Amino acid sequence: MLKPLTFFLGLVPLVYSISQVYLLQIGGNHQLGADPGKALVMLQGESTIRFLLLTLMVSPARKFTGWNQIQKVRRMLGLFTYFYASLHLLAYLVLLLELDFGQLQEDIRKRPYITVGFTAYLLLTPLAITSTDRMRRLLRRRWVTLHRAIYGVAILAIIHVLWLTKSSYAEAFLYGALVLVLLGMRIPVFRLFRNGLKPEI
Amino acid sequence: MESGMLIYQRNPNDVRSAEITDEAVFHCRRRIIKTMGLGALGLTINTGFVQSNVHASTDRKIYQTIANIKGPVWLENKLIGIKPGAYSSNEQATPYEYVTGYNNFYEFGSDKTDPAENAGDFVTDPWRVEIAGEVEVKGKFTLEDILRPHDLEERVYRLRCVEAWSMVVPWVGFPLADLVKRFRPTSKAKYVKFVTLFDPKQMPEQRSRFSAIKYPYVEGLRIDEAMNELAFLAVGVYGKAMPNQNGAPIRLVVPWKYGFKSIKSIVKIEFTSRRPRTTWERSNDREYGFYANVNPTVDHPRWSQARERRLPSSLFSSNTIETLMFNGYAPHVAHLYKGMNLNRNF
Image (cartoon, helix red, strand yellow):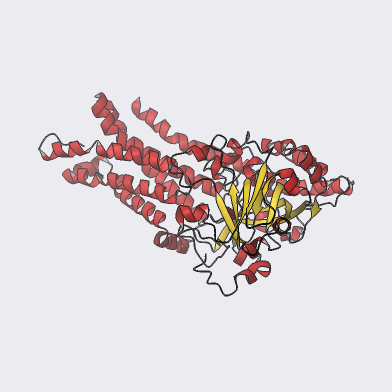
């Protein structure tokens, strides 16, 4: 039950975006405003960071509640993170840059918040590729090490939000505080791991 | 009652083919056609235009509010006599719902729709404006007294935001220069400083601990910029009183500068001998300068300024156009900056 439920939860933001685009195209009462392209890019970005936070919450939640079943949805949440990150990048490329790759290069080079966001995406890509059971068996211990890159992705994502903030830090601080707490909780885990106790995966 | 008919799109040939399929533009044109029809019947702008707005788009609830926006009686009486002003652009005006629904007015929130959602109960009457500093006539004046000697005119100006989007807005107001002359600045007055209302009870972001901006919002112009014929004090848009989210009851409009210079809900105008430090300079002076002239050759660190999205943009055509030096107002303002290094004085 948990997996199908997570799957439907993961599709909610996508369905919302699609319905808004539909309303926009038929001239209905949509919420995308005067700059629908930018609004869609922002929506996908928000979904990305929310699923990233949910992914990071799985292991601590399991430890606190002892509810081991929850671990089963971690991969799915991680893949939804990558899915919305891809949509975020795609929407930015198609709707804002209109596939002007020269402009993309310039943005990545000259605009620090885009440099950081793009780096986070590049870092997330191998994690999505190696998320299958087969890859996990193949990589063994290295898989765990590799997938710790998610912490780097989270930090880069927060910097991305912080650097695009103009007037209010409320959102960036909220996400930032959550990431700090979620990463902080893992520090003792690393110690246990070094002491040769059961590894955390 | 008779006033000149104002047509917001003076030259229909200006519409580019890319815009024709845009649904919002379609509505706008229908409205214009209706306005023209009603105008031909001898109706005035104030009744004819607003009625046609409501009829043309019953599917968009925000349009209906245009008829509900009312200033105090003395202002409504003044609005009847709006004259078409000089310097107006003949470009397609951005539809009312976007002019009043897509705003940066950070006192009311940081999302573009926040001001329209949060400024509904903002009290703008009674309103006083303090005139202070290096002027012969000082004091606090009611808005009615501030406006009394000035006839209202309409100016259709381009508005270019520093975030690389732009609109075309039919403002109603009067030239800033006329106000400046009235209060007789002394020879020491080199700059004009403007201050927005500080009222955390009414303006939620002024209470926020996470604000990147220090309030009250402060802006400024050099005195010769303030005396330029384009600098404008607006009390309305689209022939109606200014909606709260657009900076009611009185705001500045300096069309050759980025939008953030056009300070909203002004309570103080001070003439100073030293350059005022503006809100955005204090927030981040690497990104925002005092002059903030629209300049496609000087990039903002976070956005290229070479181009802009003319709103409303549709989904698969972002309606991107080249940004013009001084937002296309160079013939009127370039002389103000002769000999200045605009890369350094950005």
